[in-house]
Amino acid sequence: MRPGTGGPVTARLRLLATTDLHAHLLPYDYYADRPRPATGLAQAARLIRQLRAEMPEGACLLLDNGDFLTGGLLSDLLAARFKVLAPDAAEGRRPAHPMVMAMNVLGYDAAALGNHEFDHGLAFLRAALAEAGFPVLSANLKPADGLPLAQPSTLIARRVPGSDGTWHDITVGVLGLTPPQVAAWNALVMGGGMATRDILDAARDEIPRLRAAGADLVVALCHSGIGCAIPEPGMENAALPVAALPGLDALVVGHTHRTFPDRGWPRSEGVDPIAGTLHGRPAVQPGFFGSHVGVMDLDLTRDADGWRIGRHAVRLVPVPPETPPDDGVAASSAEAHRILHAFAQWPVGASEVPLQSYFSLVAADATLDVVADAKRSEARRLLRGRPEADLPILCAVAPFKSGGRGGPTNYIDIPAGPLALRQAADLYIHPNTLCLIEVTGAQVRDWLERSLSQFSTLRPGVMDQPLLDPAFPSYNFDVIDGASWAVDASQPPRTDAEGRILDRSASRVRDLRHDGRPVADSDRFLLATNSYRLGAGGGFGAVEGARVVLRSAILMRDIVLAHLRTVSLAPQPRPRWRFAPLPGTAAWFDSGPGAARHIEAAQDRAIEPIGPGEPGFHRYRLHL
View 1 (cartoon, one colour):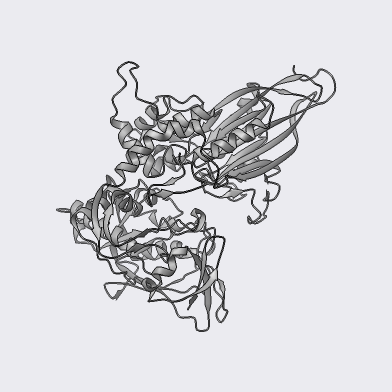
View 2 (cartoon, one colour):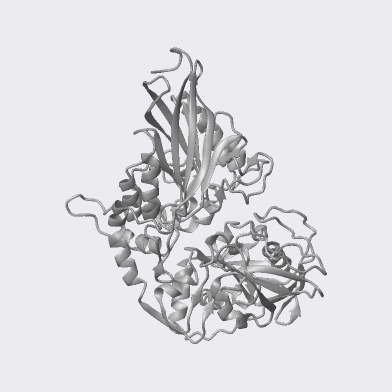
């Protein structure tokens, strides 16, 4: 039944959404070798089935917003195995990827490509998606080799009961959007490359196409953070400007691992964190790793002009930790879990001291020393016989596991003794590759200014003020091994949490030195960084203009593993940086429950425990 026959009719459609699953299937932490409740698609699947069953048959869509295929130890092992698996003799094809199998079991209606889907190259991605029983979408990415990968959008037909007692046909247009920066971040592994478009430009073209093709409603799977309201070319986090486009009805947000709606989200222009709207359009961002299921209930009204959204309700449903895994998803994941669990126990080395990251944002951190040493050793090997070998080598390293959005267990905590592969992999969890660039002293200073924007601006003489900006992800706090400096946290930051310049003249770096001598703006160094930074990931504008000396195809994780096989670790935290004194001033920060056992590792800081912090965290006071 189509518009124009009789008076207004109402109907309800439910959209269920996940995002940033990162191949988390079962509720298990392979790095720590222990269960991790409220993690993984298997637990979320049982909740999804319950939420779907509340609606009449057909009146519910299940959508994923990207980064479902890769992004953790399990996914990297699967990628390595999947690349070499021979096609099944009877079928002439490779076995289905376990994550895709699980999504097929659950009956997803569509999924967008996220940036991490490209971490292992296009050949792997195509093979992994070959058995997908749902359309895979990206309107702004197209492989340069011209071979098919994803479609820009799809039309999904549904029959829903109406208020007039009859069933009505509704067509939902769904488009996918991916950060265009993926072409730079993963350039080395993507062979022929990727043609990308601005997210806004692609959405602006695809929405009217879907309308013209018969879509009654248009939903964007926007693997992009909410971002700022003012459009900029090539935005990584562009969901808010996308929401303002005419013809769009609703959108799913992702990429930044945040939750929305969320009462802790600041209200700003176009953003209602209570109602769950962006520019008045319903929007949801369901966390990461299967922690939440996004629910959008859309009350539709059909009049002479067609279907439109009247009232809507947006909510996030957290997955209860005690939820039993869904039988179907658990069964499809069992073999992958068994293989990885056994592989993760392989011995790879030893450490004479504990390795932990509880204080990595406020003090020296030995886990960063291990990564820096591995980077420097590999850089020296690659530079043999090259003229750049005479330049001093600095290493940019960042803590990937330091609480934050990952929760109070999101820390490295490895006891002294033998190291298993799972523990070594915990030291570098992302599939980045090593890159060497030539930088000046001025660029080193700019690099640090971006990192130091993680600190709140402290008021001298005030006690118990927050030390860290909660919107600043820890993986953007680069520490530069081989240099030393002081941080004046009483000064304003140069950038905001996403790297946008707030005040180009703002400076927190004091007494920047190399080898005991002050660093001049004209000094030259080699900086060992990673492929994500080389693609300007994290808002590090200092990379612009730097000369690329070399790009290695070897994963940083493999470089760290090779280093561990050749040395017995006994790192002592290097005091690369310090806080400039602010007498009578103190600030608080939160860390995990295990931090109390390692507080002596931060003995170069005046730190004392306060008591409980945010749920699950413990709070500490830092005297400056």
